[in-house]
Structure formats: C-alpha cells, structure tokens
Image 1 (cartoon, rainbow, N blue to C red):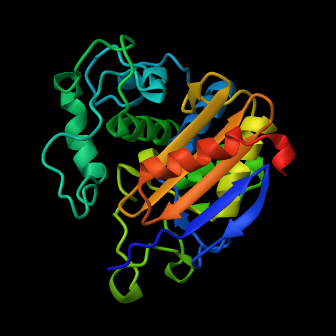
Image 2: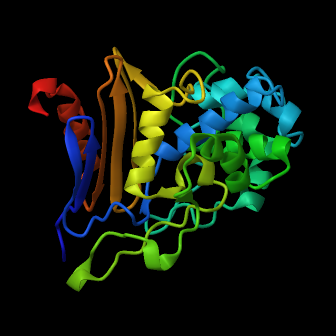
Image 3: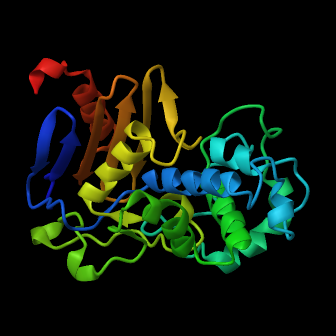
Length: 279
C-alpha cells in the first residue's frame, strides 16, 4: 500500500513545484474550494440583479418550506442546516446516491433538519451548499457547470475547471502497486459543495484573481477569514488542498494526494508565514 503524498505547491514565494508526478497541467480534485466558485457565482448573480442575497430559499426552490434561511445564510454556513445530508452515508463513496432527485426529495422537509435558527451561529454545511447550488441553477435555468462558467470562470479567463475531466487527464492518488485510487462520486447534488476538478495552475489562478487582483469585486462570503488571512481548504477521499492569501499580497496553494488534510493546511499556513526575503 502506497503511503506517499505527491504534492504540488504554488505561492508568491516559491516557483511552481511538482513532485511524485503531481503535474500542474492534469486535473485534480479541489474539494471544498468548489464552494468559493459557488459563492462567487452568487455574488455575481446578485450584482447583476438576477437574485438577492436575502432571497429566502423557498423563493428560488418552491418545494422548500419557509424556514427563514436565505441564500446568504447558505453561503456563510449560518443556515442551521447540518454538515451532511441525513441518513447513513457509505464510507467508500458517501455522495454517490445523493443525486438531484435525492435532493428534491429532501427539500420539502428541510425545516425538520435545521438545528438552530438561521443566522445564529456558523456550522459548516456541505448540505447547505448543495441547496445553494440548486437555488442558483433554478434561477439561471442552466446546469451548475454552465452557471459557473458564465458567471465566474469566463470572466476570470480560467478554462481548466470542470466537474467531469477527461479520465486521461485526471491525476488521482496512487494506491496498491501504484494503481490509481478511485475518487468519490461528487458530480450529483453535492457538486456545488465540493465536486469540481481543476488543474493546479487553474486553482492557483482562482486564488490570485479572486483574492489579490479582485477581478470580480470583493471576495465571496464563502472564503474563511482569520485576521489578515482569507483562506479555504478542501478534502476528498484521497486529496487535500489549502488556498489562501493575506492582506499584504502573500498567497499560497497546496494540493496533496494521500496526505493528511491537517498537514496540508499547516503547509499552506507555513508558506504564508515565510518572510518575503525568502524568495
């Protein structure tokens, strides 16, 4: 069984690095960095007058009951919805059965899933972002990929982001005898929460163009904040990512295969702590 952790690192203090075959032009899972793309689509659609941050979800998804949850609550993880869809999720491929029909069956009983009043506290919710993605696609009348391409990727000039990359260009974690490990199925209802793939160079472009260059305006509420740092991480079955930038222009992206997510986060934070004279 392989225990190696091929790593790709980008930052303003280090040249792009690829080790263990972690090529920067092959598609990797970016996990919850997908939420930044979804949240940015929300901000762009609100700026264009297609919807309002404060729209209750039942306005955009009529099957949902009145809960007081708004689109902004979903984006900020303050909806009161739990982290995961209800029920037992199979460990091997937890989101495979959570397709759009499954989400549609869930919508009418969202009020029974809320654990606290909307806006009261933050609770990270993949389910919330699945609902947010469904609301945005309902407004746009398109697929999720078409939605984010129109409102986020094309305006940023980024092309190497997709939910379904060519298998020949996918880079997955090595397993027993070097055979590629099977990734989770995340192109169903959970896609807006964590199902996108990108080349590492495209993921780095997302960080720089959204956080530093501000090409699409103020950063989306999907980003986490810690003092001067805006960041987001992501983890799937065998991949982990950290992306962040500071107010003084430092930025970093770390993507790892077969590496512990906490270690990936520490690597990213350590890069951002390095003095600029280390370049």
